[in-house]
Image 1: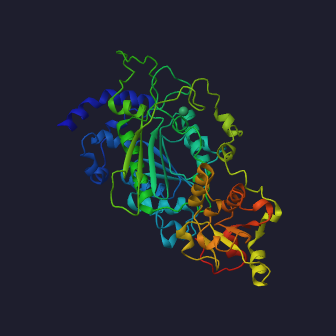
Image 2: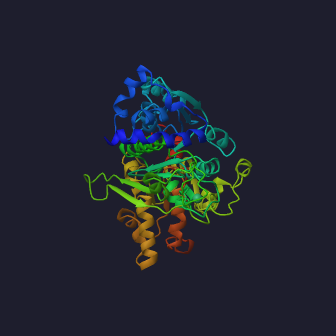
Image 3: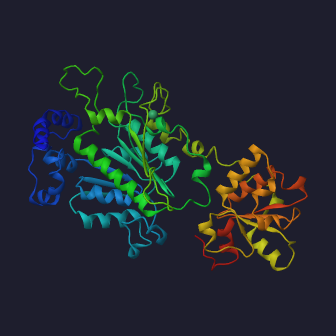
Length: 482
Ligand SMILES: [Zn+2]
């Protein structure tokens, strides 16, 4: 019944929507026999109907990133019959992708991800038009690509690209379904939907990514050389949810920009009223999924945070914003600098005598030139458990930072940041620090000195440059580096 009522009401909204989108009349056509059969199970869901399906068929989605989020998202986007599906990704399929990037296959290792994903999608549904963009999204190419689509899914994994995508979506007035996943948690939010012109603040408008996340995450959260790791179902869940949100928006026409200059609504024929779904999106919900390996479903497995709407002084969408497409294309703002400004200043700042290459360390050890020393391996335990340099003591970087901060804050014995086996070597034993790729180890060397563990320079604290990756490249090619 509800379904019938919704269908009967639709035509008014639809006319406005189609007028805006230039696809008048598309909702009048009949579905082909194949479409009817293929989509019948979703068309009978209340609220979807034939019109919802036709809107999907006439819409286009850009999926940026063909990885852990993009693969599951794309499967459901294609299955649902979105008419045009663009995929952006510059990478090739690697074996380490396959535990989570479920649309790729062992037989396609080494092929471009966009091609691999599209082959998989065509097998699910040959009806949509698939467009491959086999390169990474950049400030130079981004606007041209995004402009061609109705809605964007951000399935990327780096902060600079996230801000770039959001800024372009603001300027091009595209709704953005943004998801992220690291290690054991994921998040999801619908942004810029329905899209409003940049700078409008005299009525409630949906926020952009910058409204919700003014600053990039702290560098340790993004560039830890442990490179975090990731659980397949966590990122998969977020990707599937992204597809779900996109389908909802497109089937109901919420993605279409509306020029609601008289916010009171009134009876103006071409100003559609704010409906409940739209009102919700003006202050969208951030969904957070936490996946604790040590527990079954718990009270904090899913959390939902209500986010504020458009921020008046937002750099991208707020009042008086100077962000432009031309500016972005010519390098303003500088996304890498914006996201990298907080990178550890210690990187590259160590003196030459505070660093040793993996090959030099190995050679000195073999020749017996090194005194008894501490070899501190600060990779996550999961990495350490696959293999380490003989005699290494493990303290995961995150735990080390927490402990170091506690000692600085509350006082305490600085030596206690070291594991017991390291302390037993004595305070004069030099410390060599190794991590995965040689980034966290530099910060660790600096922190150990801040704590005074170099005892005024009498004890050497040295970074093994390039980490265990360099160890594998320079010393032991059989080392199981992950
Ligand atoms: Zn904003």
